Structure formats: C-alpha cells, structure tokens
Length: 93
Image 1 (cartoon, rainbow, N blue to C red):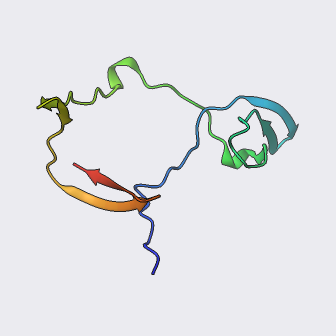
Image 2: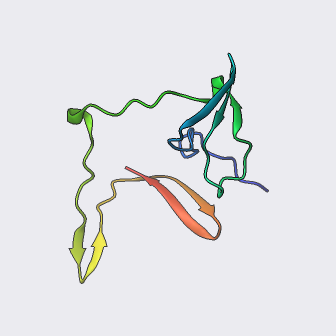
C-alpha cells in the first residue's frame, strides 16, 4: 500500500532558472540544467517571479549542540515521517 504524500513535505518549486525566451504570451522557455529531465518549454502559470527575503526576515537556523564529536539538535515533536530511497526523513518541531 502506498503512503499518502504529505502536502507540507512536497516541494512546490524546483529552483531558480533563467528565462531563455518568450515563445508566446503564455509560454516561455527556461534554461534548465541537463540533469533535469523535463521539457524546458512551460506555461507561465507554472512559473513564479523570485523575490528575495528582506534582510531582517532571514531565519538563522539554531546551531547544533556537539556531543562526543557529533552534531545534535533538540526536537520537540516529530510531526511526520516518510521514507525516500531507503532513507527516513522527518518533519520536526
């Protein structure tokens, strides 16, 4: 039985890519790396303008505690768990 994918854990956007050209009013071509195996021509509804965060809004992740030479973080609660390619990933608070 397949595990239902959590909306919180799925990626909504792939990355930052340059627009190679405008084909029509609603279709553009992107400069994608060869490692991404999708068509480079997409509808503009699938693209979003990148807006960097304001300097004061950047979240700095807490520094890990180093115990016996290994990094450790304090976890309040495990919210969700999924297995991807044999590795477990956790959504924590």
